[in-house]
Length: 305
Image (cartoon, rainbow, N blue to C red; front, side):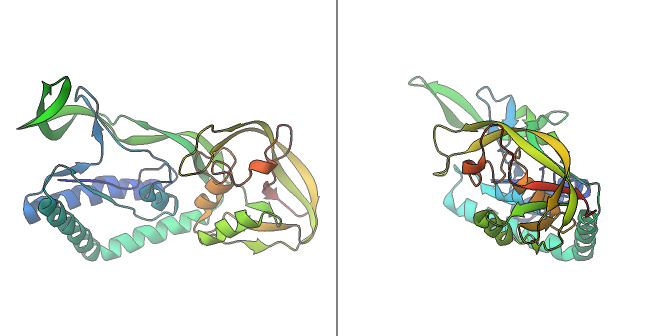
C-alpha cells in the first residue's frame, strides 16, 4: 500500500546514505506492518514483463534527493493508486506516525550522525557528484502485485495477488565527480544567481581582498539547449574544458561562495556548469554560455599572493 524512498544521491555523505538504507527504512517498513498490516517497499514501477522494478530519477529536482545534497534525511511517501481511498489515508497516516516514533526513539543517534556529517562538510578535499545514473542492486527482490490478462488487446490486472521476483534498479552511482575548490567567485552582476544561492541558505560573502589568486577557469566548448520545455523551462547542457591560471581580482567585482560550509556540496552542485540539475541546466547562465568564451563563475584554488 505504501512505497517509499530515502537519500540515495552520491553527493550525500556515505554514512548518511547507509543509515537511511540499512537502518531507517527497514525499521519503518517493520513498524508500518505492525501498525496496520500494511505492506511496503521502495518506490518503483514494473517493466512490461514484471522482471524489473525501477526507481524514479536520482536528480535533486526530486525533493528527497535535494535533501541528500543538504546532508539531511529525506523520505518519500507514495500510496498505491489502486488501493481504496480509506486504505491510502490510513496507511499514509501510520507511515508518518512511524517516522515520528522512530525519530523520537533514536533522537540522539540521528542528531549525532547529522552533526558528524555537517562537520565533514567543513573540511577540505571533498568531492561533489555532478552526474550519476541509476543501477541495479545485487540480488533478487520480491514485489507484491497482481496477475494480469489480455483483454481487448490490452493488459489488465486481475484480482489475483501474485509475488514477482525482480531485479531492483534502485541504486545510484556517480558518473562524474569534481573536487570542491576553496570557493567560487560569482560576478556581482549575476544577481539572479546570487539570489538563488541565498534562497537555498548558502553563505555568500562580500569579496574585498584585492590580490593575485590561483583560479580554475572553465572555457565553454559547446552548448545545447532543449527544443522542448520541462516545467516551462528550456534546459541547457554545457561542455567545458578547464585551465589553471593566476589572475588579479579587483575589490568588489565578485561575491565569494565558500565551500567550507554546511551546504558546501549544494553550492558546488549548483554552480558547476556540468551538473545535471545545476543552475546552468536550468537556464541561469544561458546568455553567457557561448563557445570559446569563459564561464563567468571562477573556481578559487588559492591566494592571495
